[in-house]
Length: 89
Image (cartoon, rainbow, N blue to C red; front, side):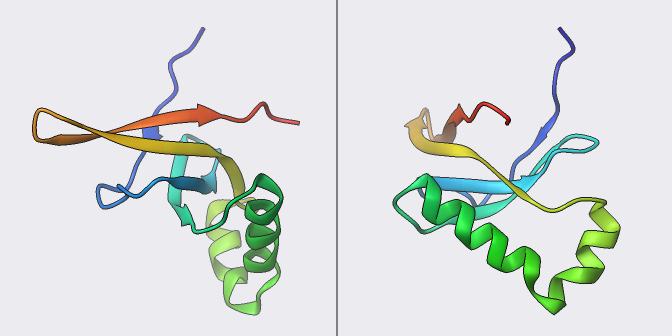
């Protein structure tokens, strides 16, 4: 199994669903303030359809996806994300 690199924003410490891009590495763009996976998916689809997003899509090469839900724990003065991946479809 090949290790996966995950780029995680250092200011992302509030729990929620996270989204971003999968290629060439997992790049977490941010957190969605929603309660369910269906709301998270709908929010990402709205962003992907916006005219402002076109240039970013050209740079990233694909639309963003919902990666999963995460929580954070405080551990010896650092915040550690605990990530629950979704199974890709």
